[in-house]
Every structure is written in C-alpha cells, then in structure tokens.
Length: 372
Image (cartoon, rainbow, N blue to C red):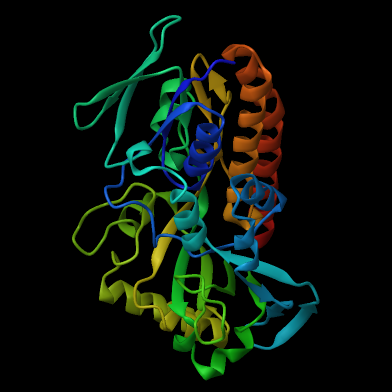
C-alpha cells in the first residue's frame, strides 16, 4: 500500500502507539490531542498484558517492562482487616506516566498536536476525509483513526445511532498517594495486591512506581480503588466539582470539595477494612471514574478505523484496557502493511479485532457482576 496521510484523533497511549508505529512504516501521521498540556501525570499504574510487552518491543522500549513494582502475592481482607485468603502469585505493575512519556518522546513535536480538538468529520466520496477542529483549522486524511476514548467524536461519526456509553451502575473512587503517606497501621498492604469484597463494596490496592519510574521502597506510590454503587440519577451531583462545574463521565483530581472528601473518609471508616480506610484518608485529592460499557457495531467504515476505548469501553476489572489498545494497533499496522488497498486492510483488521473486543467486554461485565 502506498503511504497514507493518517490523522489520529486522541493522544493517549492508543493514539501514541499507532502514531509511532505507523510513522515508522512510512505513513504521514499526525496525532491530535485535545488537551493543551498533554496527558503526563494523569495515570497511575497498569498491569501489563502480553500485548503490552509486544508493543514495547516493537517501539524499542522493552526496557520499560523492567521498571515496575512486583506484588509478591494477592491477599483478601475481611472487614476487620484480617487476611482471610492468600494467593501466591507474583504480579508486576508498571507506571502509566513513564510509559506515556517514553512513547510520546518517540513522536516529533510537529506530529503531536496539543490543543487540537476535532469537531467534525466529513466524507467526500472516494476522496480524503475532511476534518474540522475547534480552532477553525481543517485537514484532510486518507485514514482517520479514532483513538479518542470513551467520549469519542470519531465513533460518533462512524456509528451516530450507536455511539452512546451505557452506565454500569457504579463508580470507582481512586487515590494515588506517596508510599510514605500510607500509615504504618496499613503496612500489610505493601508489596501485595490487596482486595476487599462485600455486597456493594469492592476495594483493591497495589504499589506502582513513582512519578519518574522510581521502584525503591519509600519512592513508590500506593494506588487504591473503591467501587461503589451509585444510582444513575445521582451521577450529575457526583461529577459536579467544588466550583459547580459538572463533568460528563468523571470527576478529576482536585475537583472534590473538602466536605465531600471528609464524607468519603467517614464512609470508608464504616465500610472498609482499617488498612484501606487509612489509605483513603491519606488521599487529599481523590478522583471519581464512572464505569461504563460500550461495544461498537463496527470498528471501520469508509476511511475511519477505531482503536482502544473508542471501539470498546471495558470495565477496569479486566486490567486489559492498555493491552486491548496495543492489540488493536498491532493488528491495524499488520493489515495496512500486508494489503494493497485500504478497504481490504480495514476489513481484515475489523474481522480480527471485533471478536476480541466483544470477548473482553463480556469478561468485564462478568467480573463486575461478581465484584458488586
């Protein structure tokens, strides 16, 4: 296939993976990210799957797989904070921050356009797709890759009647604190992957590298998640920040009022085991993530292809979000390289990845049902 002009919408890991590898294959690639500052510092840790290691090797940064924190075992706590089950299974957690920064560094600044928010895609028959951006600029592309996540504009252009996310009935409260902020009375959480399961409550936590990839004790961070049921009609209030601004699907760090933070700490003391309650209390700026499901009816159409969460929003219990995105990118790259025409390449990509996305989404729903 001749080199293509490719516009990638969304500059998180899925878009960056695609940008680096397709540029390397000789295509003219632009990555458009709507954030003006970039996404550094927004992630915590990730549990790498096989596809993550594969794409790190393809990009040439496989050494990042060694910059991780190892949880030696999985433990399950009762409400009193006693360990009721131990599973001897080591697991590595990587730093999302370090991974993002290292991948982004492989793209020339001119090809990674921050503050570039897509508002419309127009098909032009057999000609290139026309893209319009919020700042009034326009561009054309032979292929538009939607890597713009759960609120995808590209998804809306591809499947306008089937683009809505479905709320799963619960949210994830999240915290990320320096390891040294975790009180001594919660030390049993360290170097372990810890869980607490009860009707309506599911908490977990684990260590991740520090903001610059530090893995030495005392330099790491503790990442905790608390899943709680919330009625859909209460979401607007949940996602309204202390300045009165309502966010569509989440409440970012720093948005919670001190009164709501204190209420969260109070609830944690009542509902969670003491080690987890102490971890929650140590977080000054918790965030809230709404849990949603989405399955695209089609991953491709015309000159559009979807990857990552733009195609399938899967629940975080699977720990497969980044792995799924990596698998999508490697598949799309493979078929673009193997086929002589774009239509055939996209059809083969969809045939390979659509069943995979459906399978992971179904797994996420099953895990969510058992967790809550």
